[in-house]
Length: 334
Ligand code: AHM
Ligand code: MG
Image (cartoon, rainbow, N blue to C red):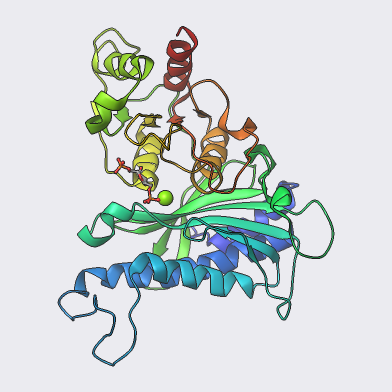
């Protein structure tokens, strides 16, 4: 089989998908380069302590950043210089980042989580970068917050990079979901998972069950349903929880299943779940819908939620269609 590179595939989709303009292709190519740099550092991460790189200063006397800060600065630095963006929002930055006046501007807005799965960064467990791209609706000048706070259904592209046993890229521009694996020997992402579809009914449920006592009753009922023999499978689902959404999501996308981060009462200030709508839930929801699955906050489609702040949090149930429909049914009956 001839090996298709991600650039070739992007160019094919540029012709087929109305949202995938040449500029989106260039933007994704810039993101790919940033992800390759992050991937290289992630692969060296286990050496940090051995080589004494975790302090503020390394053996060359240079300041060393933590991996999540490193990923954030690589993405901001490279993407600001792409000439295609007018504003950037990162999970790591409280405020919207305007592309500086001295750099070339474009009409796209990039929202990302530079390194998701923070609790797994230091223990050699898979982590990822999540991205979401919108097109600016107004013209010139500084981008207002209102211009960024769009529903997820208006994304033009979204996806993630997974730094796992291999580095992968999975993306959609609204024309299916495509997965690529980085071949380190040639430095290219090669098409390994064309037109990904999630099974309609899954096998796996993924949730942090340590939060059980903080859940509301419908959430407890949902998890009991997955663990019982009285469900779609007529036998318990398998429980799998890595604690890196990108990894849990990716496994479920391939095997079928559902990832859940419901609201809980652990932190009274956060009565709406842990995950962020704009940089985590929206891009994953765009991918899952394009793969034939669903994403909800329990009641509403994630992609229809009107954001009112940049770092808004949201309960998230995402995965195989029949499993998410069941979750909505249980919530709907309460
Ligand atoms: P992060 O962006 O700080 O890494 O938080 C998001 C992560 C998700 O990847 C993961 O699903 C979740 O937090 C795990 O949270 P918990 O440790 O509470 O189960
Ligand atoms: Mg995150």
